[in-house]
Image (cartoon, rainbow, N blue to C red; front, side):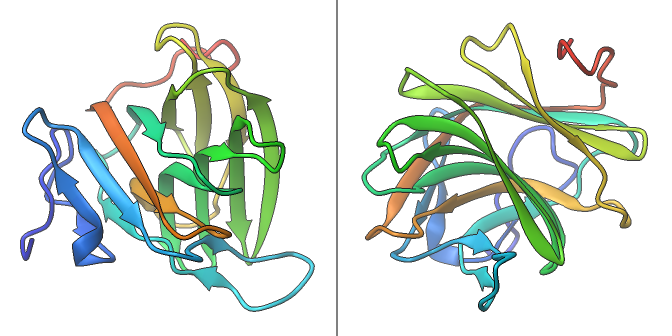
Length: 200
């Protein structure tokens, strides 16, 4: 993996933070595996930053773009998650998660970090997989989620206030013994999101 992982639509290979965490299947699905107690979070209540979740990142297309994937997770422990990730540096990043809640229910969760992490739960998902999407629209970004890949729900609209971040994937298991997430139907397009609120 010296040259990175090649995923269609990205301008170049994606750089893994953990060489052993990522693989492509024969049908082109991306599989990520996190070890125990892995997370990306800077608690606003204090404590040391947690930046141990394996990621796979690279430069997006220039200008406006959209990255989407169908995400499934082998949920076992609270906060296990498959993630779409925007990454500028270890104090400036944002993640859109398909995550296992403390109520033991899959949920859409987003975190925007500018020094400290701003964590927000969105809605529960009664399914084993969900579509996630991150879009750049001018100077801002939008997170959307969908249960069918057609109708999208706005999760978050935000700015990071930095130069263009890298974009990609992560997987985490903050309270568990490890977690595997699969990213299928990955698409990266240089398309401008037309309508922010309804996700079209």
